[in-house]
Image (cartoon, rainbow, N blue to C red):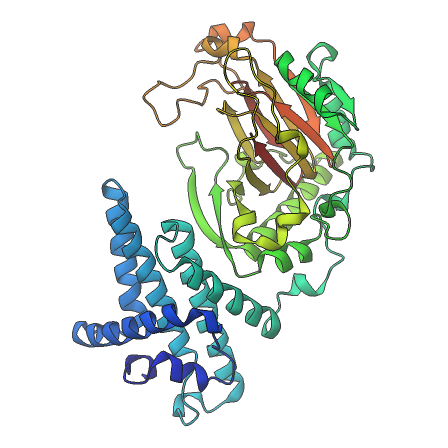
Length: 464
């Protein structure tokens, strides 16, 4: 096969590809490195009897991943993993440029399909390296490759959702739209004494700081309505997500009801798969509600039926992976100058803001947990119910052991508390709210919070 013939350099192969595997000029260092790797892997896989250099690189990548799972992760092992992913991508790109006289590629349509598949595999390999290793080597070159490959795929093989901009998540509801009846019913069910106070924008920096120093959660309504994610670049639009991030870009998702469940796991999936999954879950939930309303029966709890578990992109810096999103949800000025705390928790000077995206279908859950930073939680798409407990209630929520990886997570299930196992939880007075598009919820550091998505949802947290 052509990809087993490393004598032809990757650069020459790219030139012969009529633009299919063209790489940006600034990638010369990675190009030279990867050409050498393809050659070495071609020779190695010939000796080992493997089918291709890509398989050889994949074997090296898997070995590095296994090593990182079995022992403390070192910078050297992360570099090995990243190098293997770059080599795997290079091998796929090499395969994307078969010579014109290749008898196996006599049909032009078949050749185009094979090339596109190879380019998609190359993009996935680079994303895997960037996400898993943190790119200790070849980061700039890999990112340049990713941009070129994603642009190419968007031009020659656009995802169907990118051609139908009218498809929206969460009914396309914006900041000034009334919530669905099912969400309004949840809001009405919250006891008045437990409701988190709401203040209307604009809120000055001094007003915000005074509220912060009260040490309790509060909602700011109307402060972010002008963000592009509500206007020219709406995050309710499935086409907008795939244009901004890339349909084929890999993203990390949690799979399962909650990270405290024994069957919970994590996966890397193409962005298009996550968006399709959210739409499928919306259809399933609508069907469940219709069935329940008809009296035929049916469950609205997706965790109790035989359907696949829900996927959730949780607490991920998607802005770093997809810079086109950066201006859609900018860091609020309110985060940039926190007040000095009397307990010494903040010196009142600006600090780096940690910005994370949360994206998934209705039914996803973040169990009761606490974080070490103040949090402005911006709700952009859909609705979430948030239940919170004060730091003083820590003994009553039964945290996991201090030495545990889940020391910041409560053992009690807020939605189904076991009074016999956790009797003190009955004394906790929860603060509750439902946040919708355009709301920002301030969660003070140290406050325990449980979050359930009531609909498809997109949120951004700002830790400061």
